[in-house]
Image (cartoon, rainbow, N blue to C red; front, side):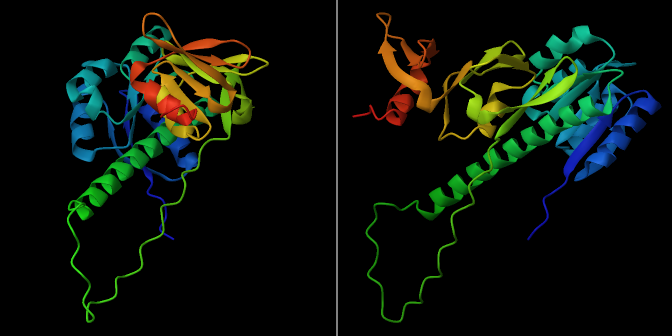
Length: 283
């Protein structure tokens, strides 16, 4: 079996001790390759373009600018998965606006770092799966580009076609979600999650007993939840399919989905048809 490719990390910080601490903590994680370090915004931009890391731990304040300047220079779409590191908590909202997967406020402990890196690793894996799915789709399109064209009758001396490759293994979806409560990390079983809603740079995990607030992106969470069990009805809401009791069209033409217990959530028009199909309502 081919070993999983290590996560390639770039460390950006103007403080030597801060860089060393990140490197030591990454060494404890395993499956990590540090592809470079940078001590300024300009060096960070050059290193990101030269090494194309999977993850960058990016200091917010540096002598020649900020980590947010680095994001603007490289471009949000071209940035690797980003974890901002800052001594100032007020930068958190701007960090998430810049599409950071997490941020660390100095001084942070080992457990908090591990949590941030776990989110970064999961985000990297999600990006890889999306890329591989796109490549597979393109390959299949090219192989079957002549669909509809009558195939030539097989000749007696034609070579026997090689057996088709087995379908790709089903992705492993999360069964537990780590949440932080008063400095302690607890685990919420996915089986208890009823729905998820966006709340600025955070998401709210709703269970029958409690609502948990975590630092995560909706897209990352959607990729990690089993699509046979959960569906994103709106850019700001994911629901558990077996809790849906009905779909209502409002006088305005918009739709709302009703969950068990009476809760109603808005459904994006672009997602209505797929939701109807999932509910067995499509004609």
